[in-house]
Image (cartoon, rainbow, N blue to C red; front, side, top):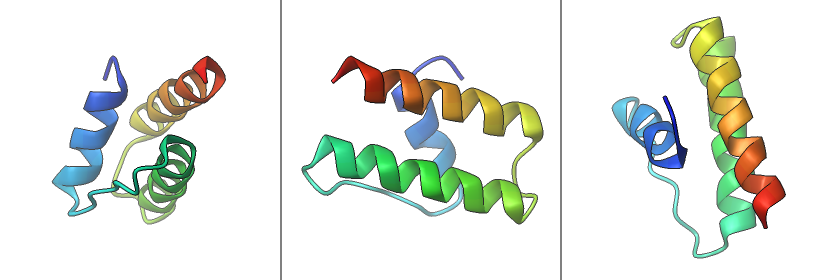
Length: 62
C-alpha cells in the first residue's frame, strides 16, 4: 500500500465503499473500518499500520 487509493481498494476487497462527498468524514470512516477489519483479524498488523499512516498523512494534508 502506497496511497489513499490503495487503502480504498483494501476496503473495497472487504465490501466497503466510502464516499460522503466530505473528505474529512471519509477519512474518519475509513480509519474506523480499518480498525474494525484489524480487530476481526481480516488484515495483518502491517496492513493495519500502513493504512493508518496513509490515512493520517492524508488528514494532515488538509
